[in-house]
Length: 486
Picture 1 (cartoon, helix red, strand yellow):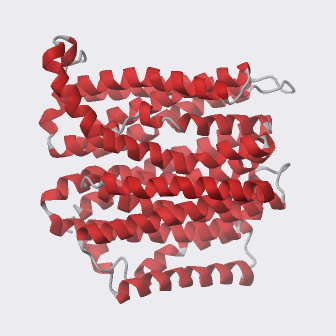
Picture 2 (cartoon, rainbow, N blue to C red; picture 1 turned 90 degrees about the vertical axis):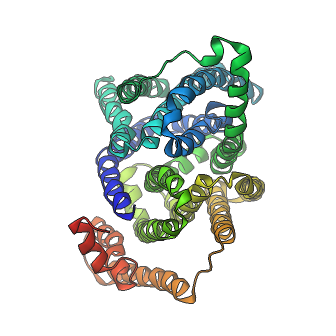
């Protein structure tokens, strides 16, 4: 299983790193630079679409991925019912989100933009649902390709929009949102076609033929999905409230500053999400082989921890030059200081991805939800306390503190659940690795005369010798992997 994880995560990273950064830093960043403060409205409304993801997803993706991994023969029975439920809940999700925005006194133009973004979110979740069936069946490579197909298509639609839009005319952010809708719909159609070619199933739900016989199935699916739905809602709430609160209390200008820093964090978080999406079906399949769970968890945690610390530190040291490259006309100490703080949320977020995925695969979602609720309270309290004084910088502090609390909670819960005790040697390795990366960054930044992006690349690459130096990855393991034996 370790070898399977390594091979698939490398393929997944290759596919995503080949495509998604071009969209995030090529298309999305260009739109922000051309729209200015209007992007702050787009960012706030985008965060608003996440608040009711409990209805848009209802935990169906995680529930389905876990159960199909364990019982693939149930896909023809589950799929049509879950698909119908998703469509019905998506309609409710759109209506409730629009009503909330109306009560928050957004104008008609903002409501129209929100409607487009909500439709996009429905398509995104539909793609996730279809992919969860494929990964649950063990088609990891196909799932990896689909994970970036929408962004690849967006490079064409959004790139064409930016290229053909008349120079000198005000760029409307609504066009950017619409340019994402067609690629998402096309990706969903392709994913559905691939899944249909793998497994034959009916699209019409079983309960549509006979309500009485279908009700027990619906009850089972709702009960099974509800804990995962709460996980989705609570996780989106404590990660996305910052942008909404900042825009409401400080205005679009400060929300746009936070959005610029959050873009970099979002790009980094993609790595953690890729790990989680691949690990969930693997952990679920290993439920009956507990002796194999700990080695897979240890390997995945070491890799994501090493990468997240090195990348966060490299970005923190290079934040000023990075923002001058990204936003040459808007870069300022306010912006790069916000990024310098916010990027450290990447480390606890990555840790949370690994341990929460393990807990989810083993059905411990109820215990996780208690900490997520506490995280929401902490996030709101810190934002209300810090935004009036430090605006986006204060929201960055709140985000890092909240994510740190959640990560520590997930690690503690996993150790308690599985009765694991980290040794002093493991703790020393973690601390030693952080100090090693810090020393390498200081030496590279202060003692070399390379151009800044070379320094940043070298700083990020310091994780590789760090992995070997602290014996997190051994040479013998690499040789075994090359021989196809793990």
